Structures are given as C-alpha cells and as structure tokens.
Image (cartoon, rainbow, N blue to C red; front, top):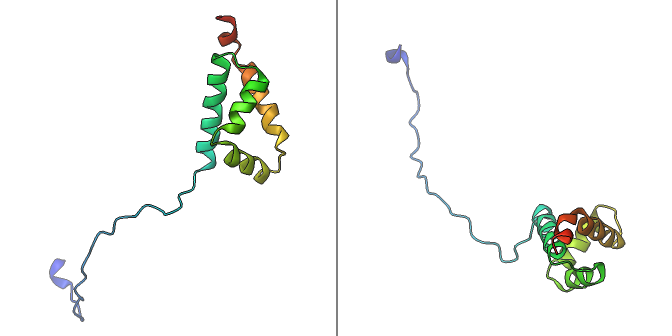
Length: 100
C-alpha cells in the first residue's frame, strides 16, 4: 500500500519557529478576577467585623473600585448595586461576627 503513493510535486521546505507571546503593554484584568477579588475582600471585611460604612470606604479606596464600577455598568447595573451586594456579602458571613 505504501508503495502505491506517488507525489507529483516537491514539498517546500518549511522552517518552524516557536514565537513566544510577549506581555501586553497595557494588560487588562478579567471580570472574573475582579469579582473573585471583590468576594475575597468582602470576606475579609466581614471577618474583621467592618461596618458597612467602613467596608464601603475601604472598597472605594482600593484599587478595585474603578474596575468594579465598569463591570457593574457594563452589566446594566448601577453603582449603588455594588453597595447592595457589599451589604449582602457582609451579612453572608455571620459566623465571623459571632466569633467575637
């Protein structure tokens, strides 16, 4: 079977070279990464028994706030919905509050 194969043209020599990706000059963060970080911060705020006012102040002053606002707006939500979610997440971890 192998002897029946006939090639009528010469194959061109192809040189394979691996090209490594370079880092972006302006890397962007993924929505998932921002939301995971938001959840982790909320967990820490609840563990340290932050009030809603203190937690929201810390969140606004974190480097996460601008990305979080853009994600919420892109999903058709208001910036006030971030505060609602923050309050819900702080109340989601009542076992942290009972420990003190």
